[in-house]
Image 1 (cartoon, rainbow, N blue to C red):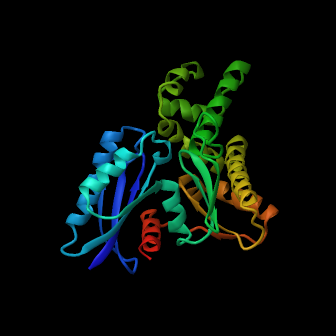
Image 2: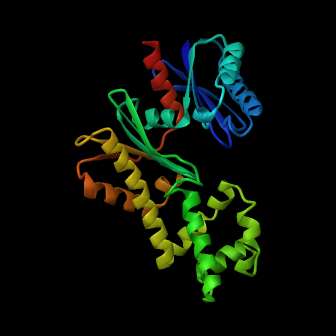
Image 3: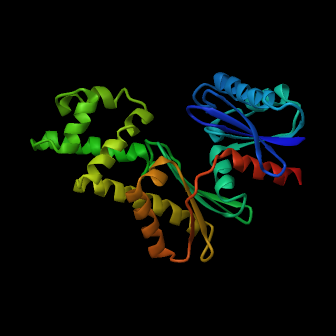
Length: 298
């Protein structure tokens, strides 16, 4: 049996999935992070381990192609390191792209359209007639508006304003302090300046809880997140000079799991472009590797 292997290497885990040539999943292997910018040597070891686990689960067959979508790949100074490692470990043709590209191919089934992602960070990627354009994806210092990190930081900034103004702490502030084990906003700096982006974004569920309970500020943050994400999507539409028959897919916990963010996002886009088609289903990004590999095998 001939098959292809798709690899999704992210900041926390690497997932390798084998698909037969009809697109059916036949095995998988998982390992640690595959983001080359965290620690390139360890990330490469994790990627190879995930692929080996995937192959070990297949009794017989031949791997025709490996497609890898890796977080941080575009920021790697010398991409020859990962290329040489894959070439040495597996005597198989392969392609390496950024993880956003495989997510785009997965949700849009390898066809043209736009993918907007909002998890810890945020980015919008569009492909049309072989041309690729993007907006966002600048990271938390330069941007990432509408992301989990951005949402949480709006709440932390509001806490500092309450402290500076001598206002009573809001329910949101009280709930965040309780989770941190703090009694005063004055203690906040020791968390903010030592926490990772993911640790900060982990406070989003508290904001969602407060929004569900009717807190105006929390509701507004989530609505604003949807607006910022829609703005990035519309910028990509403009860059690609698209007008009608635009398909937009969404991915990431913020856009897919928080109804207020998603509805704000969709409504703002529809105000500008009422005829767009939305893809809201969630599929493994490795499926995008299947579409990319099949295109290469042609």
